[in-house]
Length: 142
Image (cartoon, rainbow, N blue to C red; front, side):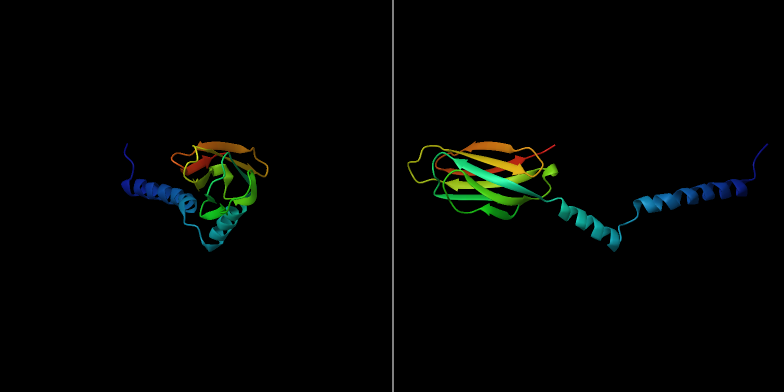
């Protein structure tokens, strides 16, 4: 016994329509209201942190940047401590450290410590070469 083809085609199209409705809701684009909520959540993810820099020999120039924002731009006695804001530390933070020393200074170490609110302290030490240091230090909290 064979089925009636128009009824079979109708049932097939009806099945696709029933499946298309929830799929369109799942894969639909975000409207302006949803985009504002997502933007607000992204802004909340930044965390206050204490950034500490220690060095063995006083550098001639020192710059510490988190993202595009310069956190430390001058030189003080070691250790230097500054309050900063970290963008989403759960995803990891890139810290850009640049320093130069006067001629004749032996290779020197700089230790960077970042202590975000509610998270463990991360510490990294980098050594200079030929009286200069230019490093990107990635810190992650899991």
